[in-house]
Length: 192
Image 1 (cartoon, rainbow, N blue to C red):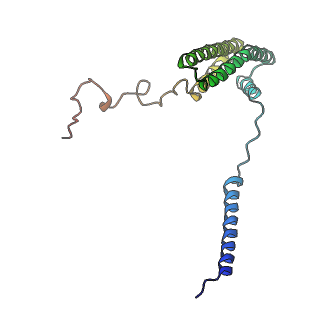
Image 2 (cartoon, one colour):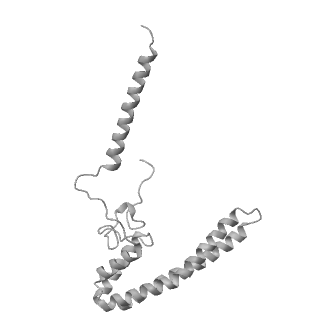
Image 3 (cartoon, rainbow, N blue to C red):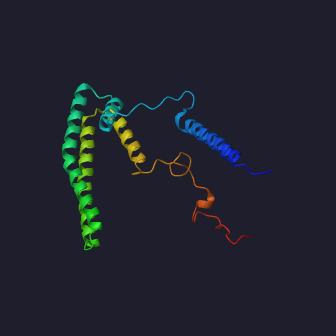
């Protein structure tokens, strides 16, 4: 049996064509095919308007409350915009300082402290905004606002979610292995 270059080249071309077809089929299958019954997500409109609409809908704000809320949001934007600009400038200066041969940790520390001061101004403005929103709400809306804020804080990791019921405190009694000094001998850890 002799080695034929034309036969080898022909088989190689056929193999590469089949490989390309398989690659295209996999791309279609994994990237473009949706599970049955699943529609694509609707495009997002601008984020701030979406949050505003969400709050208005969830709290069932009246027309008067909605106008006051829009004015609150406008004031927040006006108050926070210069703070964001300053933070952006300070961040850019810190990045430039990283690459200066004479830029030291002291100047970076000073820039970081100034960024922290600006972030504190931003957070203060945000909480004043939320306090204003709470002042707009009727008593029946305050419980909903409180629940929305708690859910938001859990989502961003600022607070821990409430523990599941039945596991201590409000959760119920702890198992004996977790009790320290509550009667009974200590657990035998010697393996006997």
